[in-house]
Amino acid sequence: MPEFFEELLSSTSPPTYKFYNGAGWTKSQSGKEMEINSPVDGSLVGCVPVVTQEEIDGVIARAIQAQKAWNEVSLDKRATIMHLAADWLRHHEEYLTRLLIMEIGKTVDEAKGEVKRTADLIDYYTDEARSLRGEEIDSDAFPGFEKGKIAIVNRVPWGVVLAIAPFNYPINLSASKIAPALLMGNACVLKPPTHGSIAGLHLTQAFVKAGVPEGVISCVTGGGSEIGEYLTQHAGINMVAFTGSSETGAKLCTTSGMMPLLFECGGNNPVIVLEDADLVLTAAQIIKGGFSYAGQRCTGVKYVLSYEHILDKLIPMVLELVRTDVKMGDPRSSETKLVGPIITESAAKTIEQRVKDAVEAGATLVIGGKRMGTYIEPTLLSHARPEMDVVRTETFGPVVSFISIQSVEEALRIVNSSMYGLQASIFTKDEGTGIKLGQKINVGTVQVNFSPQRGPDHFPFLGVKKSGLGVQGVRYSLEAMSRVKSIVLNKYE
Ligand code: G3P
Image (cartoon, rainbow, N blue to C red; front, side, top):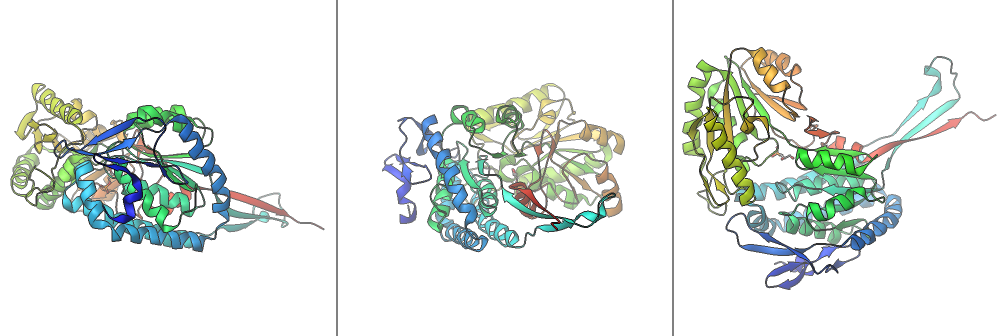
């Protein structure tokens, strides 16, 4: 472990971590710990503390106090700190990559990509924050008003932002909340995911070492069921930014009460393949979209809708690519392509069961379907139907289902009646048709001739229905992490 991160450890064997209470790295009074076992081989990656409610109270009290002073720090100084945090991540890319591989089972390229993308994202947020502007509005445009009132409109922070990150991008999707929160003058309390806690603690250290003042950032660890509700209900929290499942998102909405929420939840992203589609491109995008990080991306390709005669050509092409371009295995091995382990064995069992249920209900297993511990073979299902659980609910694993349709209207009905609405893809050589069809699909983003994806990260990223609340993406997140404040000057004579 680089010296930079040594403060995080309370013991080396097994590696046992402290949490960051805003003022320093400390053990929890609870004496309780969570063991983080690697999805790769079951080995113990480390133990993290389960913090107590009193410790959370202390963290939030410190954050409330510190935020006031942080809001007075110039944006230029905050920006310098953010750029330094990004550089620290770059500096420790190799170590953090190894950590991500073992803690969450990403392949080498995916883990490295997450660290690099996070550093670039923090830099981009910082540059964008410098260019945010307020405005001045005169009164005389509205009927019945003369000149004489001027609204000076600016953005101010919410206060203390609670950031809850998911296991699939524990560094990136923590930083995508921390950076805009801090740049806009908020304090931020990070609750990392269980798998990803250790990565979240390391990320916190990058911000601390970059110079984020005491209390402005903290990182509390513990299971969602143990501390999640307490955090979201806490009177000292002024905003919740969450990425995770739709089920947890729905629960958080009821517990958090009346406060701003920025949620990105489940996706169940369809691909519609029109008759004129470039099938070589389509097949390659289905592979990339369906199998990267073993399908554990909320933007993953989950099901493909097309005419029977197109599927007759497309499925063999996708199958061929599964054989050549996808290889399930240990993510540390250079032989492995896209499909490493599922985050836990119980999650893998759920995926396996969904595939079995679909086959029992009439779907055809084209390839895959077998589970070995946490590993699920890359799986293709044909003759799937929208009511099957494997299609109806988000299956967070390497499974792509093919559904035959009679018309584009039928595809639209299936997609628009889904409870999710994150992204959808359309494949067609006619971009005009892609745009027109895209306008009829009720999701946050429609990709024409590409698989669903969040990036580039300055594009808006949002889900409708059970897929989310609010809009993320660099400028959108900066705006979401702040609010408008008006001072109205009235003519004084
Ligand atoms: O929460 C979004 C994440 O699951 C997917 O991000 O960049 O893989 O499309 P990305």
